[in-house]
Amino acid sequence: MNIFQNLNNYIDLILNGLGVFGPLLGCALICLESILPFLPLSAFITLNFLAFGNILGFIISWVFTVIGCMLSFTLFRKKVKRWFDKKRNQKEKLDKIMKALEKINFSQLVIILAIPFTPAFLVNIAAGLTKMSYKRYLFALILGKIFLVYFWGYIGVTLIESFRNPIVFLRVGVLLLIAYIISKIVNQKFKLD
Image (cartoon, rainbow, N blue to C red):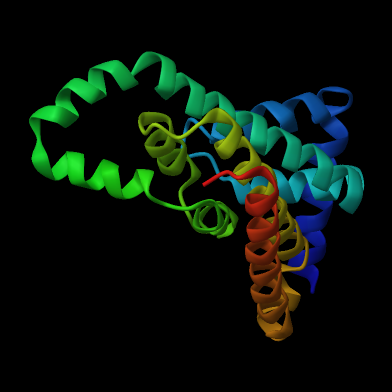
């Protein structure tokens, strides 16, 4: 127990040392993680939950995860897509992969984005290089990232408990099912497929 108390004290020391820059740093790091995959999103979300509480930490993490993913999506759409399309047309296998990605329906996209271990930067890049609309990707991010941020915040804050209590993983499974059902409803309402 002493190790965990020391870790908690260390985290408190870091968070108190950041002062007013804490929220800005938390937002910036989460946005950057969508572009630079080596940054640990789970750690940033956990720190936001610890620093700002469950509700505000969740909102900050969710909003800036969506913003970061959209920035990454837009960057690849605007700066790389034309060049990529030329290469795509020259390589049959690459063209098949991209056509398969373009056929992913809205519900599947939401689930992919909601799964905590899906590399967001790869999904952002792939989506940015397809013909997927901004609206469709944004709606999928908004829904999918709710569950991802909740998962990392909940697991991060209660990591030790999650290993002792397998119910946590059952709850996450239920959340993924809820994400799927909501995505079907949103898809029908906004006709995103």
